[in-house]
Image (cartoon, rainbow over all chains, first blue to last red; front, side):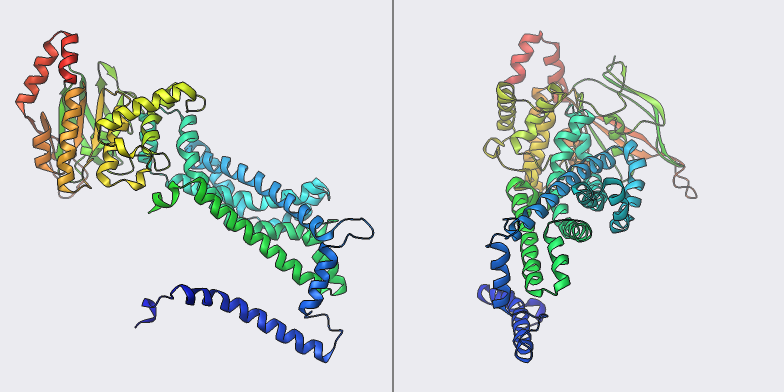
Length: 271
Length: 262
């Protein structure tokens, strides 16, 4: 049978899903064990025990100086920044995208502007943000907003343009004004697309967050990783990276479920 | 005076003339079918009537008034595809037409007003045979059902003109027959003036009370865009239906109303 026609059945699919993860873990722990055997003080590839100890210390022991649980404190700060940044971006991207995609008079000036803005490397203007907004929370949130809003807006503009003109005409024959047409026809059709766009932008959002935290912050997941780098504390860095990955994956999964739940018509309409 | 008057209408894109010197008088309640070869301007003419495009020259009068230059609720439309809103249920697709004009701020009604709108919508949907699928989304309906929905959606506005752009072009022959019956029934019950573009000649002949054939009279082989199409044949059809309608129209209004709904 040709390879292209061979499909895994349920159990073998599960096995195939787990296999690469298992291989990566296996390779890591083999390497770790070997290095630690040579030199018990090796810091590069910490063992599972060392990492568990680090997690216990950071997540389940109150910090002797501040009385806070460092991991949760970092997580809360980072997630708050991320949520505010993503929220503002989603709202701004949606408004800009709808305006540029449905109203030709708005699209004419907005569309080229958004294209140019989305080409500006956000990290290159991070110093400007620090100068303008200071080193506080605002500059970190702004980096996320500036980094992902133009991309979101461009994607939504494109989706708005893809709404068949027949539907816009039909809505007008049903008595819609420009405003109610956007509210009842364009907006609801773009909301699921917004969630999908957000999912695609999550990676960038985390990138900007960690970059901003690494440079100027007093807490946050990115801050911690860059702080302990000085001590070569791989036993902290690796669990943090896994934790960030898990959080990002959970957000992605949550947005996907939300799309399916809130917009049951969406999958069918695309077929 | 006729209901719709088309006076010397030309439509031209760049140096491509699509329609030339179109003159037409249509009475209220006529069922005009528009036929002709592909690209001969039938759909362009329909878009002009809809207000989606403006004529390069000439004018179109609706009831003595110059036609509004953009689509509005006086003219309903059903396209071959993309006529219904994928994000709304069948019921809301039709109720939308009652909500939009009454709520300029939010475009939606609440409470009793919303209930009333849905009630009216569901009555109409029962009539077009969608009474059992009120809560489905359009993607869950077959092509024929979607077109029924699109027709109901257009009719809820009680437009005076219904424009159909190959509405049954994508349907199976059997389903097309059912749709013809439905359309004629709805046409008999309402005062509707219908313009229907079709590729199917027999459909054009069997449905219309008037068949308009679009064709190019002059062709310059060296400049294919130089001349546009005209209405080359204007054939009165189905005189029995025309006569019935005329007779009903001649009756006193209250009597005519009962006859129509019967």
